[in-house]
Structures are given as C-alpha cells and as structure tokens.
Length: 170
Image 1 (cartoon, one colour):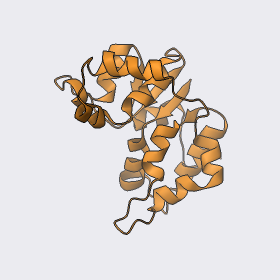
Image 2 (tube, one colour):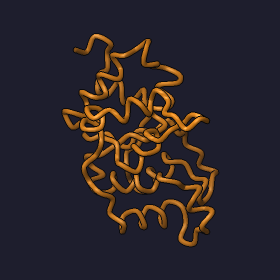
Image 3 (tube, rainbow, N blue to C red):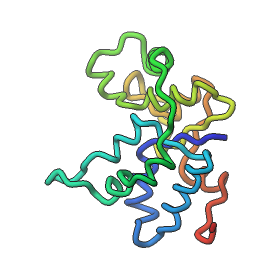
C-alpha cells in the first residue's frame, strides 16, 4: 500500500503531536517510510508546507525540514498529476460548475485525490480532515470525496498503526 499524505498531516504533527525537538524519531521514520516507498507526498501538496510560513517571509521549522535534499528525495512523489483525473475528481467530488472562487477553495485537494485514483486498490490518502457529509461543493472534505470515489482515506493515527510506528523503530 502507498500512503499519500495531505499537508495537514505534517503541519498538525509538528504543531500538536510530534514537535521536531521532542520526537525526532517520528520525522526520521517518515523519511525511512518514504525511502522504502510506503509514504509519498505529491509535489502540489509538498509545496504547501515547503513555502515560507513566517510573517517575515522566512521558513518555519517544517519548511526548513521539507527543503532538505534527503527529505525531499525520500518523500516527494515522482509521478505527475493526470489533468483528466484532476478534472474528474473536481467534477465528481465537488461539482460540475464550480466558480473560480470555489476552485480556489478546493485548493490542491483534487490533485492529492487524483493521485490515489490512479490505483485506488493500492493507494490510500492520509489527512487530518474530518468527514462532514453535510458540506457541499467546494466545502466538501477529503474523506467525503474519497468515499464517493471509492478511495481509502485514513487519519494520521490510523497510518501510524498500519505502518506500526514506534519511537524505537530503528
């Protein structure tokens, strides 16, 4: 199984659960999982946390980590998005006639989901977004779009269980 990570999985992990200075094993484990082709991050998603986040334009700790050559080599997914699949995800998952504003709201989510659609039997989306079935159109959440398209979608903790993360993993 290949796990495709949404940006929020790393943003939330850094902020809430696995700060770099407290749980460096988690970040080393992610790199290892990328190296052995279990976890990957599409370029459209990678760019979300690699870009500067501070008000002064400098990179935060996550952006610095993501910019590291070895990290990028391990985690960056080598495939390119299929424009037809991105369009399919957008139309079937969010709506046929989205306005420019709505397309902007969906952000890069259709790209992430389209990578899983290439091989839905062997690819899983990982996100911290929570299902909100009542949301419509551009406001739909990744788990709901994945469900409708037949794509497996899990959260961070399910990923850690499935890949058996331990701080003593080495």
